[in-house]
Length: 184
Ligand code: AP5
Ligand code: MG
Image 1 (cartoon, rainbow, N blue to C red):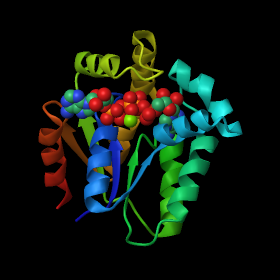
Image 2 (cartoon, rainbow, N blue to C red):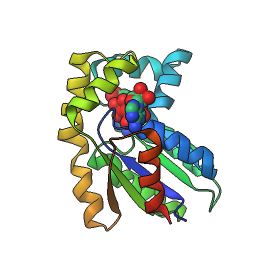
Image 3 (cartoon, rainbow, N blue to C red):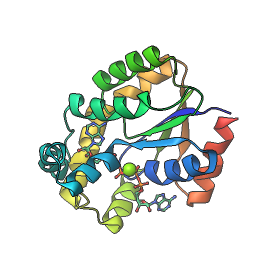
Image 4 (tube, rainbow, N blue to C red):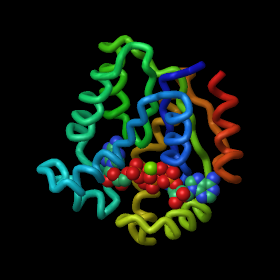
């Protein structure tokens, strides 16, 4: 089974929901840069103070900052332990930095799962979730940022033969089944 995974997709596609289920079921380290940043904000750390306003606007926090977070956690993960990256990388610079880090660690990505869903459904899901950055204007801006900065990663990983797409509509269990089928 593939144990080094990356979840890619627009805000609201269900990356966090699916990543949490899969990581718990298979003993993988679940690394969500969004969750880690929100924890820093909640703790009132220096890092959290830098990130808070940027996140509230729906823009990307600096590459250096998220990279430091990811690096420290991946370096502590034993060979063969497996991990699932959710919400990282978010642009080509982060993808290149990740490739370099994973090369150093000798732990290459085995599969990138692209979760696809219509904008209308994304918007509805996020509006009913109601996180601090889930108001309509900010959600629309996050979708724009996704299209401009993150979507280029689709062809980046496709060219490297790593990408598989799944439809992210239907129940959580249905989507989980589609993802599980890609892992064996
Ligand atoms: P982040 O936390 O990554 O947010 P996001 O990408 O906008 O994605 P979401 O978490 O909103 O969506 P999701 O796909 O995880 O969906 P979820 O499972 O929650 O990032 C937040 C901010 O942090 C960024 O804007 C940026 O500022 C910063 N940041 C993070 N990473 C960064 C990075 N690498 N570089 C720079 N900045 C970074 O599901 C959504 C809702 O739908 C939930 O309520 C869920 O219950 C529901 N749902 C899920 N699945 C289903 C289903 N099948 N049917 C019905 N409802 C469902
Ligand atoms: Mg998420």
